Image (cartoon, rainbow, N blue to C red; front, side):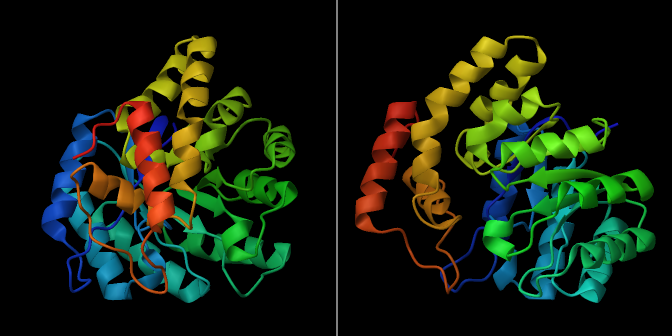
Length: 296
């Protein structure tokens, strides 16, 4: 059984003015998602700015989220690293806290070979029992998981169960599903491709859009699963202008600004990221209003 089906939020990490984690705001966000249709919380992923967190911050944030969510919806902990030993240690810790699953991005910068990826994921999986979702996003990591590599891992390692596919390459996704006979939990890593991946047998999306439109993102998936493919596709297309603006600059710069515009200020982004430009802020605000999101 999949860890979740539907729309999981790649949740932002709120920061105070001194850039420490704002746990009061994170608490509010967890309640917001549990009450507004979100099907899973993915904590400390790319959108959560895990790359600029210390290991202590990262693990405390994971622990807090698991404890505060209180089994209302599944919590998946981002525990990937470009160091296999670090990924193992963080994965073991998150599992001890009670994470329902682990999201492991490909090792970044190292540019591992496909054999290296198999060794990396297998080494982590041997140390934990929690289900693992691989995360392929070569545009950020410089490292793509080839379909044959995905199939080798899913077919031979019991607790490697899924992939967050953010390559944007539908042909690659189709090849993954063909090589695994569909026996993989496929999640879209791109909000503009939810319906296309569902049509290939996907279980849902790990979403940036869900931060600002959780119910709508859930409904895109729910309509599809209920057989209303036309309605699902309509909602997907209606969301495209907003999705485009949420990626007008590097994620999570725009989505944090969007939440501020909604009155859910989660603070700024940590350097080397910078605040959204005035031009993009104006375009984002218009797209939000056009989509029906009230601004403060």
